[in-house]
Length: 152
View 1 (tube, rainbow, N blue to C red):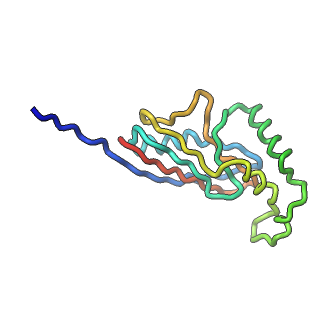
View 2: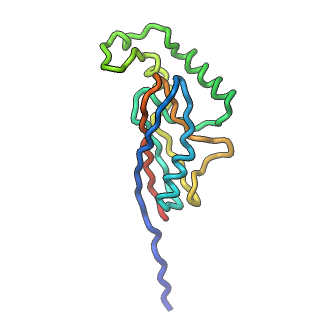
View 3: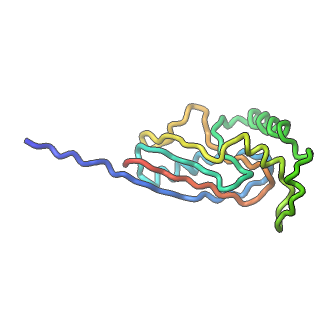
């Protein structure tokens, strides 16, 4: 007797998440939006790649604890303070842009993306881990791309 086993459905899905930030630095928790996209995709196992479409906004995985987020904001400001002198600030800006050398320097220390496994239809994050868009420049519209690859 021959048994036929169906191959799992392989899928690829991509979404953009539009955000409006309100301050800098600001840690915007986007975990639930990423989970929503995984649910819509029907994927059970695979990989979620979350990417910022901006050079002055980063993606990080960390704990969503208000006092920690204050510490992280303070650290970014100490590493590359907005009030310091940056050669980049001498470059002419476009309309609605401000001198932002500090935010580019801070972004260099963070990442533009995070890759997180999907297991059982959800993100394989640790107990306290959350996904954040980190605004480093000033309040503005931001876009995050979520790319999902896996099996359903």
